[in-house]
Image 1: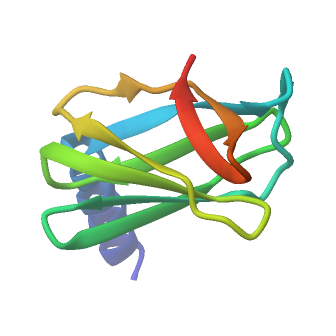
Image 2 (image 1 turned 180 degrees about the vertical axis):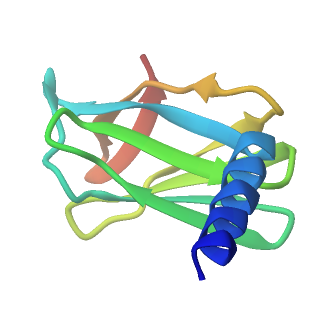
Length: 108
């Protein structure tokens, strides 16, 4: 049983190492968004999810590389932006802005 747990842990670590980490911060009106704001990254027909912590920081791991759509589920809206997933970790910091009553994401 112990060896099976070790094997599963090694496989998980190897998978995470191959995944493209997408991370950064999200702020609104100069302050970090609250903890628990949902983040979705859609790429190649798959969706990967994460959420913010109390500092507005998020981490999402996408297995596929290439053009993605990052969506933030915030204040009953879903602002989104195009990003790219690479083999190495990539940082995207965002500011939530209101334009014509709709939330938008702007790169910081």
